[in-house]
Length: 213
Image (cartoon, rainbow, N blue to C red; front, side):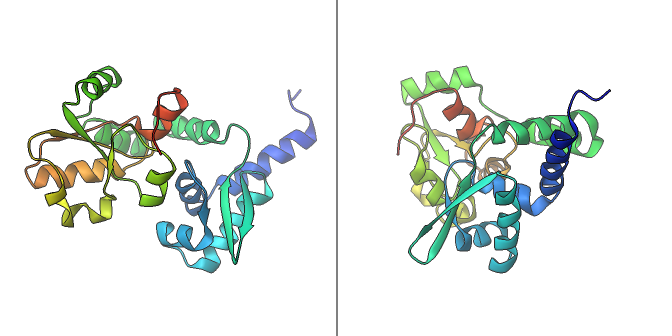
């Protein structure tokens, strides 16, 4: 006999159906730390405004997103509840069960990274530069102490803003966000001394660590 009643199974199936779309997972990731307008989410995801709006409505229908109006714009944010835990659990299962995903994650993790403990020591010593490579809007909603923000798509044209005397530590949204990995690849190609904090902002925030806005 099932441990769930029929209605609960129907609700679980509906949520799973909504999540079974790469564009919707991308939109959820973009809303991990801040609310965004439909237009901005369209830019971040590479989808048309109409398609973005449609995917957002599906996510909202099952409670994964909430929205509010501000003037002529509709702003979306993640809904209440353990939504980040749902995404994390899906990623952990994919990592465990699927060879392609495991290879992708292993390739990402094999890039030189800095441990949590070393990062805390380096922050106290002020012996490195923290580089937040998320979009500006996300950085303004909260970031690691003393971090500077250069979105990864602007990094190649703004290298002269970075100190050559200190090691760079790049970070982005979380352990499965590839923005910092992309930034690290670019920086190393330019001969810049850099590592990445692969846990990212979400793990830092969830641990109750101090953030700046």
